[in-house]
Length: 156
Image 1 (cartoon, rainbow, N blue to C red):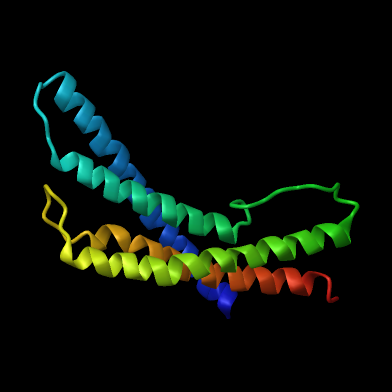
Image 2: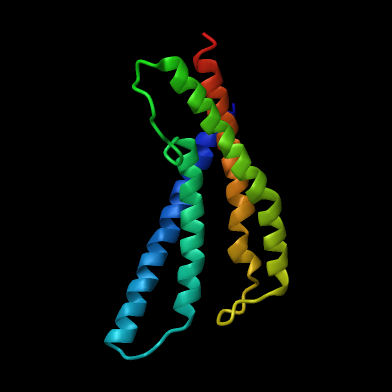
């Protein structure tokens, strides 16, 4: 059941992350055009680019955790299955250390941003920092799934 939920979550995150990345590339391109050719400065572009960059990076990091591409280190050849399995479990557990940091401290950071506003767009900075606890929850869901999958791999 968790796998099906995570499949849908990954699809949504991929779509949203790609959308943020496209907006990021577009506004940076617009900024280059406006400064170099139109000789005008659009200050709002920096904040939109920062917002889209943060969200696309952390959403991408969450997806990378699920696909086991975020922290993959191969130390031993494939024939050492048991050693690689133990290292996979250690890697899976390291995700929970990241979640332990991002979830409570990211939430605190987000709450601090409720009273601070961005300079140009006048948006609460909590919108920028909400990505930390959001990504932590996604990583937690994905981490539980991959840990379960890796534990079952050698229990057969």
